[in-house]
Image 1 (cartoon, rainbow, N blue to C red):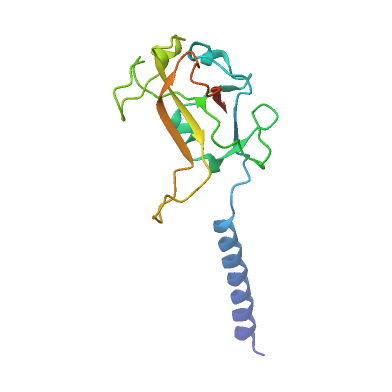
Image 2: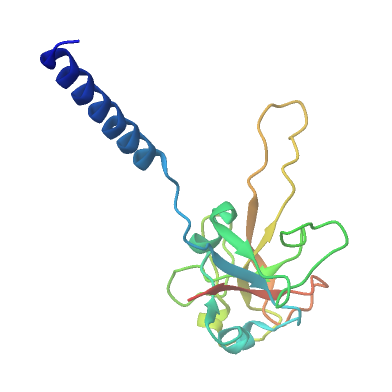
Length: 171
């Protein structure tokens, strides 16, 4: 083997190793821990939401809960159910921040409420709640339900029998 052939083989081997190393680096996924979230075990009125979360957690907005796949459910702080696995209990309602100005009157869809900025516990005032739903299929359709359902007509005094807690997310 002549010298040029040997140098070419060494250069080719080095380039192959470098390309392999770069391709592995590009496909590496993050090992950063996911933020935790939970639904309080206690039933809470609308005016008690701002102080209901444990230290290092805050009252979650609807936007923070839209994709629960990027979060990890904290079962030690949160509610649980017999068949919930590592996630939250299904169809368990919790107060959730709506991101709008003070409002407690439901005027239909698209009008989020927030128990007058979470200061009211009146039966006549409403607040936004959310629940995780199993991915069931709608009847006669191939469309699946959203993983999180939001509603804006929960009575701020928790009088509708929903046992509403508070959705909390890690700071």
